[in-house]
Length: 190
Image 1 (cartoon, rainbow, N blue to C red):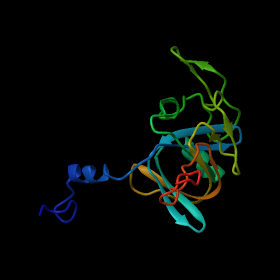
Image 2: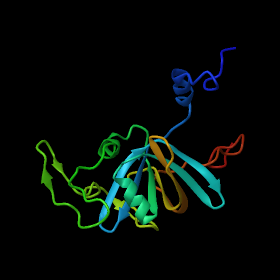
Image 3: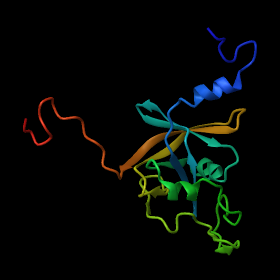
Image 4: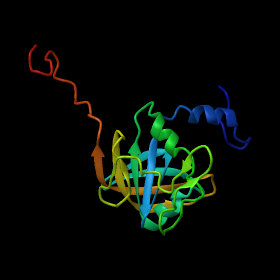
């Protein structure tokens, strides 16, 4: 039997990475709003961590401009993207342009950066709504969870952890219903 990764002899990074690669992930956009500033970023490290009250945990890369908005507004929304959703993934996979004000103020004017304009608000061209907290929710997502921050953990790692109590939700994609009883179709006929 091969030795376990970690322990006194040190971690075997490739073995750890291989094992972590087996942990299931989905693609989400975490969004936040503070005053007139709205931001979002793609995250894949999301976990359901409590049922009563319902809570989720989200690991967010340290230093992203959305972090101060989440911290100061004490709220965020998680928008689950459909598998293969390339447009929203591309829009939110990078940090916003430097012209975006962080922590308040009026949205930045449109600034030309050459190839494409850098907009101060990445949600301007999208169909969005707010549920409870004011965080923008993408209607193009499969479902969304609106959360109030109940805990923030900043530990010695490249990510920080936000725990949010789910205070609202939307389902935009039809949810498959349970299988029909054996021997019967959905219309009740055998």
